[in-house]
Image (tube, rainbow, N blue to C red; front, side, top):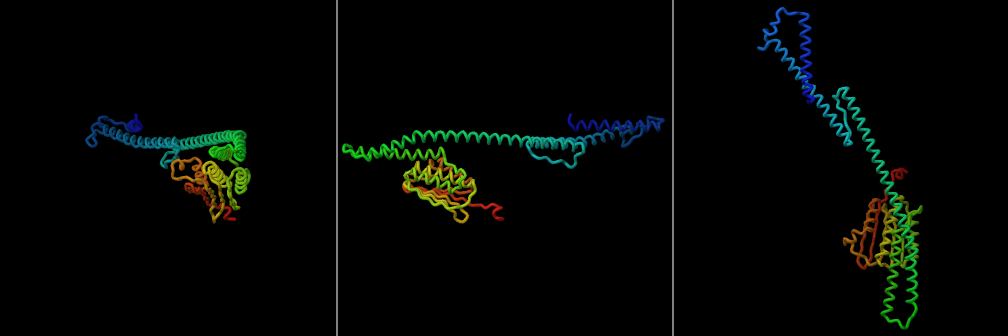
Length: 349
């Protein structure tokens, strides 16, 4: 039975009960000599007793419908509130609710707050767990990369160096019985070993990138470029201006430089490399230019390159722009521009 039906039945019973109680009380105080008058006296062509009975039933029906609809509306509001609580939404108390219903609303609100706090706590635990797991994965990956880089440096890199020295000794030693074709082949082998050394150095730079480790960006760049100039047969020039940058910007620019230099060593076949870190007005500019073989920047293979995507993402993360221009057989120019945004505290100072 629905809420409205229950209230209608209750209203009818209550109304009939009141009529019977009042009638008995009245007739007890003022007894009738002739009870047939209750049926003989008519109201609107209806016997008096029947009229009173019908009116009491109608009053009970009206009262029951009104009360039932009100209770049904309050139950629907509570049901909607529970649905909002289930979905994590906020609820509002109806102003017309009775004090008893207000207590129910307060309990529903307390339940909603409890569930929200539980959800927030669960999400916090999940985020912390994911961050901790990601941190452990990064540590494992970093350790494995360092191990591979160390093994490659101690084995393959040393063997390539020995092979390079041996080939240099062979090609520099005159041999009357050596044909021009053999001389050409020896030169090609020496060039292949030389290129393999460049590839190996670029690979080591990828596997074990040098971190700033407490140094600022300018110091880290100079240290990296001086080391490269001593190890690779490239004419490396640089201009690095002094400037103060946030740690996050310094780290991203340094990683972009490492990625760019590594790509030059592996793919460009360049003879010179020019690096600039300058500041013009409120813009930091990192520019890397080589005179290598270049490439077509519109090729899908190039646009989907992991190295280029990584550099572009790093530039965007610090609010900068990434631009690369390359012409086949002419060289490549990479440029990152980062706006310098002053903190409110610095402005006030």
